[in-house]
Image (tube, rainbow, N blue to C red; front, side, top):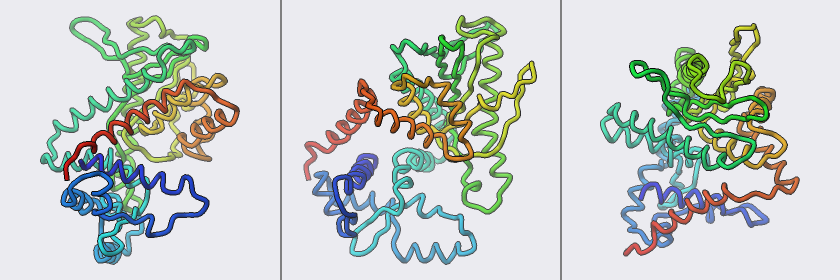
Length: 350
């Protein structure tokens, strides 16, 4: 119920101004438990309990502002409760991205906390996170002549079994491979909410960038050493991408990693959040001019100008302006999710 109510609100607010000539008024933006109950055919009490969980009042906002007046980067209140109760039980969103995070990242940690913060939950979630990313890549990349999707595989001997990276996309025509390592990690909150917390930043960079990239790099070396897959050769070009649950939008750190011939491998090393990975899969499927490796290289070249997700989204926009005609895999996924959401509320008795 929690997920579907929030999904409904996000969908409603996204569409509120899409077909209008002027911005919506505050009365159109504001929603109430009674309004949402009528729209979803759901108990008012259930709706109120959910809204209470994800909103703050003016008094709570004032108290938070006063207690953090010397901490300009502290926004925990808005991250955990991105709805503001303006008056008389009416609510407006504080910021759209924070509201959307309630469906995924924020929800994950609410469940984790409610279960006593047991490590087993995060381990199980990590496996599902990897599986989701793998299946997403297969949906978009399969049956395309320019790519070969290599599923995760085990190699080595009986005593020392080695696992390949989570997702591997080969571009046979270029003798190149894009290697993806999935980790259900996110930046430490202290690296975002405190001033100049270098220790928190260093730990975050290590788990978002360094550790996954090293793991994938070592896996590639082992595949070559054991000659474990015909698509891998010492003459191929490799791009390695760490994909995490969340990430810094832009990171200006340079990783000077050299191969055995003294070549800098930095242009082929990336760290994305799951949304950027999804957008990359979308763009790679429909671009006839640029393959996935070209797009990753363009993300590296423009890393000081904009985030990788923005680079890829602009490429998608450009493709549509040039008359891109797709097989609608992306729209099909969106529509299936929307239909499942809408059907959830059908038949509820008040």
